[in-house]
Image (cartoon, rainbow, N blue to C red):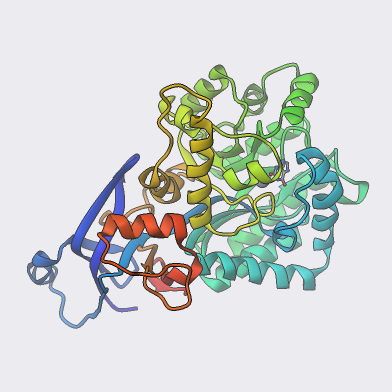
Length: 434
Ligand SMILES: O=c1[nH]c(=O)c2nc[nH]c2[nH]1
Ligand SMILES: [Zn+2]
């Protein structure tokens, strides 16, 4: 991989909820896929001299194209991909019992795993997801196949083997001993892949699937090995009530007692968190994966991202396939605006999320939510070049480009109208993966 230069319109976030636009810019990517320089095109020649660059591969973007950081999906269930678009007639707990566990237990079958995992990784890459935080299945062998598919196709990802010891069908739970043993095997299996882009993540399904003692053990494994953690929180009113009845404590406090709230923890949903719980998450630097499409499909509710932001909680976007039907973070950006706007109809003086806010959530916000903002999320020098090139003038897409647009207008069109047809190139760590 040689040095690459991309010249054109660049948009990224350099601070929370703040978008930086370079109308005519450049990014230089070194042989290791890291960002060596970024600036205005007028300074390119001087920068090349300073860096002593000779032969290079330069790509000049057109006026309908933008260079953006890659999109980050902070919450997606790979095994559920084959159910995307199905079964949205039931709320969470019934949806899990009627559709989801029955599907996930099929992941004993290695052929089925292979087909679905290749498809979901390929599809998310095509939509510009350079980093995904995946729930696998209960089975460590199948979750390892997911990690293998991710490594083969060149995505950056966290992959979790799901931990469940109760509340699911008898043939889709493990004993606590099996759960720990298979989690350790899974962690070793991912390490053996030897791919720095793919990391294991500790994944208790939610507080109803495992008991406190078990969560504590998983918390210890995460702490000893410095691993990330993912689970669900406060998605549905019945779920919250069951957790409170079972543990006699608030949802977030249960995870805190288990040692699961760390700066490397991402919790999906967080719709019904109290002010005290939000404060606790902020103190623990634990993040929320906001999954607006899933929240509507499963009739769960609307997460108040503005309130989380005001109270210092980091938020990223998740597709939550298959609670969400769409594997696209472009779609999640649009859904997040829609959810926030609906919330504004019921609140006084409420300023909903706009296209810049959701672009932040999809990029730097997602990187922060996954504690990867030292590596990815924007085009800061030294970070890995995870990026997408989008074009708003592509034949047979949903966008007709009929009059000139500024870079900000191109981004708006992408957020409100765009899809994978507009994502024309995808890079992970400097390597083209679409
Ligand atoms: O959206 C969700 N999807 C799931 O698979 C799940 N499991 C517990 N809670 C969940 N929420
Ligand atoms: Zn989920």
